[in-house]
Amino acid sequence: MLNDHRLIYKQTLIFLDGCIIAFMCTAAYLFLCAVRQKSQQTANLLLVPVAILLCWHLLNFFKLYDAFRIKKDSDVIAIMLNTFLFETVLFAALVYISSSFLLAKSFFLFFGLLIGALLMEFLVLSVFFRRMRKQGLRQNVLVVGSGNRAKNFLESVNKHEEWGLNIVGIIDGEEKKVGEFILGHEIMGTLKEAPEIIHSHVVDEILFLVPRTWLSKIEGLVDFCETEGLRINLAVDHFNLKIAKSKSVNFYGLPLVNCSSDPAMSWQLGLKRVLDIILSAVGLVVMAPVFLMVALAVRGTSKGPVFFKQQRCTLHRRKFTLYKFRTMGVGAEDALQGLQKNNEMNGPAFKMTNDPRVTPLGKFLRKTSLDELPQLWNVLRGDMSIVGPRPPIPSEVNHYDNWHRRRLSMRPGLTCLWQISGRNQIVDFDQWMKLDLNYIDRWSFWLDIKIMFQTVPAVLFARGAK
Image (cartoon, rainbow, N blue to C red; front, top):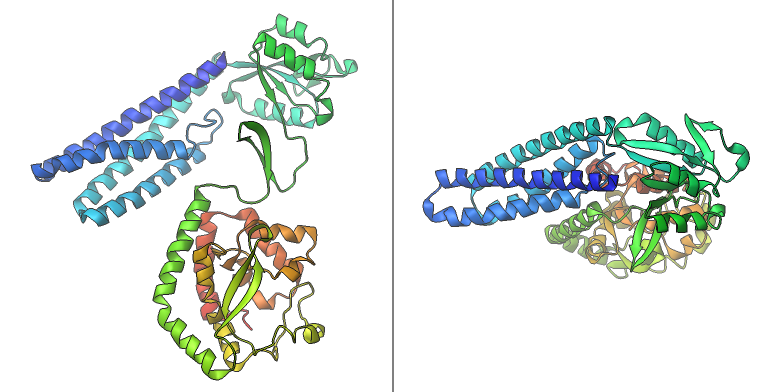
């Protein structure tokens, strides 16, 4: 079975990676032993297995060895760079603890060489195995179905000879289609004739690309393939998803297809939360004097509490208490109903230039975004993130259109595309929602970093603030 060949390739890649990692880390150890005192050699030696296991784990974590037959070279390079980035961060922490700059220079140098060696090894193996597949190490696949999904698959196979797939033929449910060709591949028979076709040809795997209405029709053929020991592949993208992405998951032992339109749980989301904790904790400490001055100013210029507390919606409409420095007079929420006629936002949200409820100090705090500082506590608690759609009021959410609600699939934040795109200058509610959904669809950790940097001048120059 060609599955054995895939396994051999994967195991070969893992073994060679281990040899290269062990060689480079041992070289780093010997280098350190040559330039440092012998009393420190034992400590250096302990770093060798740590470095080997770390690098190996990161390569596997970033899915280097998954779907390697069709993995692009650019994907491999991205995985290598991510591995190097994480190693750099972890060893930077080690250097800080040990105060050994020699350790930093030597291991960072060898890690850089290691990534280069692994990349060269992967590319050489890819070229070697692709050539082997072209010369006959191929997988014979029988396709069941002749619809659009089957056509798209066959078109991809025709474009990528290096995948090593050989299409034996096509099985269809309609007898009148037998003998027709789809992109150079013959419809060889019907579902009833499939067992005979399988017996008369070399078939490694059978691929079902059929509509969901066919599930009962193919049950007998699936049973036959299982009895014969053929590998069965069943396409499960039965719905024309326009936004959500589907993937197979194991849900407590139950195989399922997961369809999700929000960012999937990944190392980047984990890193986003770590950054939220660090920045909010540092911000609360560093900005403590500013907190004190603003609190005294709020208390001294108007009656009422220092902080304004309000129920807002976070991830998937969970409710939490949002904190801000108070910028309005007491009873401001009760006066909102009488001001609705002056709403400048054509949607459920309320925006008004020169809102009479805002105090003179409140106007300054809003313009400088200082009123938002207490939300660092919300970020630290996990109610919010540094970057994300602004948290809405539950009463606003009640008036959302269905497509608006997808913005609640991401944890709300202090800043987002709306903040750096003019914020209060945007009076079209749908445009605001589209900015949030654009952020969700494009989300990555690096997009968050970019938005953070763009937020600084937006806040300093009060772009779009009222």
